Image (cartoon, rainbow, N blue to C red; front, side, top):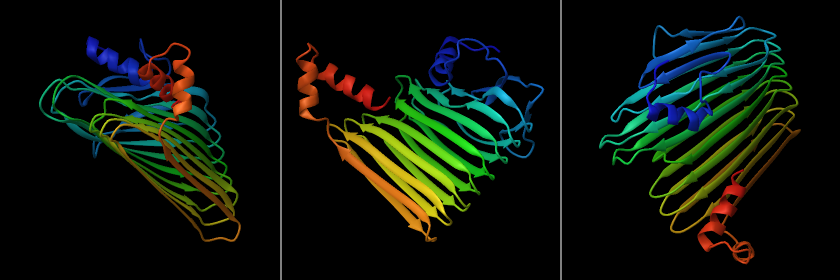
Length: 307
């Protein structure tokens, strides 16, 4: 795997990788494969009909990881990929994804991706994605990830999605269908600044008996940035659903939270919460009495909020 210094820095930011990872991996750089490895239980196959890969995990696979980061350091590059994850019954794996864009040019660079998860009966997966941008060019750094999830009976998925720096525009969509006893937890962290725009859309169909869904979004909007959070959780059976959006607004930013819940079954238990507010003055004063400047105090509060 041959990467330059900028590409290696992006890889560190989005996947915490200093060297080639253990286990299965597929690293994509500037629209091409930069390295791939499979294991006895995890296969990665290039699609033949469109850009992307199929990640196939054998039933019963335990304690293995899959790294699939994407890095773009070429300004003006725009790509769309389709990745399918077929997770066998009773498997238990961790998937580390994410995308980093470095743009020093005057043309937009963008990465759009559709990740589709087919999670087998009683399987468990932890899916981690980080989005990051840097570079001093005037060209935009744009990411539009779509995640489509189908959880079979008893399947469990935990998703952690983080975007805390440098992405000028993003539209993040997550769609899910849950079968009997399935469980989905999504934790999202977003920070925007400048004139950035971040949109989040969740659409969850809780079709199975005794399935559960928990959506937790934490965000900070600074300067003149804009954030829009939408969630639509549908309880179509006896189930438990919870949607929570908590945002800090600063400067001249705009934050909009639009949660929606729909119950079509008498035993569907659904809750939504949304809160938007500024940093409390007493929090700032307390930290400033310890010797911090106002800016340092704000950074401490924001970092703690997004943990």
